[in-house]
Length: 202
Figure 1 (cartoon, rainbow, N blue to C red):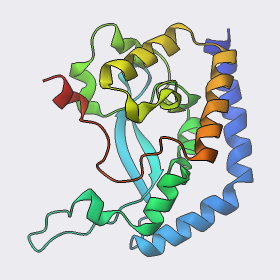
Figure 2: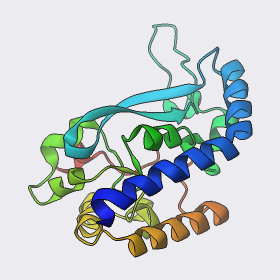
Figure 3: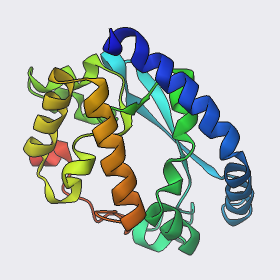
Figure 4: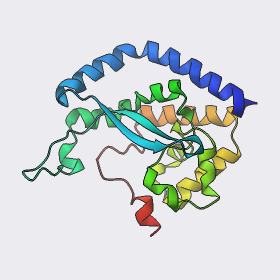
């Protein structure tokens, strides 16, 4: 019952409340990033959601679109702004995903939405991660994501889906709040994450 009805009702209700309460921060940050990023404060990227349906995930933009003399984008490290570093460190770059939750593309808790190009690299067992809405946070994120390899991360996703419950969601949210407040395992530097899944499983 929780999985099919109450989880979505809670997501909808809480997202509306948070959007209203956090709107001053949202608007202020959007204006600052509008100036820094030449009129483009948001970052949109296609990701697979529930049942592998493609949607756009929303984030505040932490990098500029600066290019070299040949018109090629500079490295992530070179394009990461001071403000971008700050919003990543405080997880404020994830704030627009409240809209994804409101629209029903995401949930507060669930497997993180990964890249479309990863779809062919999941095992049949791992594809269960797409039987639920992806989350702003998830079990892998509170289990030391940056210290886990891909097999371990995806096993966390499987465990989450197979043991989905209100209590487990609450536990993950509490652990997430703690990590954000203490800034534990926050990946700030662009390009410093683990190897991509398609490279990992070649």
